[in-house]
Amino acid sequence: MIIKKYQGKNETEAINNAKEELGKSVVILNVKESRPTGFLRFFKSKVVEVTAAIEEGNQRRESNYKRENSRFRDTVVELPADRKNTNTEKAIEEKLDSLQNLLENQLRQEKDETMAQKPVKEKNEIVMFMQMLYNTLIDNEVNEKYANEIVNEIEKNSKGKVTIDSILGNIYQKLVLKFGEPNLITPAENGPKLVYLIGPTGVGKTTTIAKIASKLHIDSKKSIALLTADTYRIAATDQLRTYANILGVPLKVIFSENEILEAIEEFHDYEYILVDTAGHSPHNEEQKNDMKKFIHCADGKAEKEVYLVLSATTKYRDLVQIVNSYSNIVDYKLIFTKTDETMTLGNILNIKLHTKADLSYITCGQSVPDDIEVINVQKIVKQLLGGN
Image (cartoon, rainbow, N blue to C red):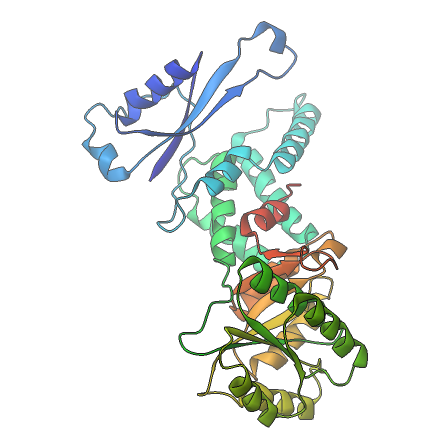
């Protein structure tokens, strides 16, 4: 797919300009009014800008496609086949406002300082922009290794004459693809599905399982039962029992693997059995072995999904130790909690790239069931690139 922008004195003229170059099969994705800026803005007329798209095959069949037409400002963004959605285009259209403004201010300052000596060349601006992208990723605590990989990939794939808009669009698309699509809880084909929440102590597993239970039971009208194996913390059991009473769902405290099997029989008519587990240290081999037996005891008897719950406030080095210890136990999906307690979300990308595990949910507060949502990849990418 080819996406380009065209301007005109009004919407009709802008659309006609798009059709003149791309052909009559063009699809208009967005229309916006662009107001003049700068010192002489009061003497300039407003213009209308449209974003138009056309499939490359259709475009080649249009005989009136004029490659030599250069009177329009355009940006070409090659979209991957599985990413043709308006949300992505809208995010690119916004140009990540705060990052764009920051760039323009810095470039303006650099130009003012060097105007007396020599003009700033376009190539220098691109270099400055790439450096700014790198610095922005680092400021958002994206690990240096991954920040370098991302910037190097963009530089390697930038062929010919590139613009700041096209670079920004490409890095946005690349980051969205690196995060991938969220992978959420799905029903079992037969019988109940076991949904385990695992993770270190203090990350909010019990509150998170209550939020998920509320969403499934109240919003999706699913039948659920709750199990808790966190017998080390009486407060956690009491907390989950309170939530179970509010929801009107059964809760069972379990102490052994055999009781998991008994619960499967007891709740065989239910759709989901959510299991809250005790946290353990990544350095305690005995606890790790017990957890492994606990998670795999029902293999072949019930379908299961396992979610590793991590806090977005934990340091990257500690997160790596945690995910590595659980990787030796079972395959898992990722849930990040406490995203409201940090200003930077780079660790979500870091751990995604380190583990290759699918992302699922994030939590952003203590309120049950409101403060949980499916991870919004576009929103996180925008923040990593300097957006609000």
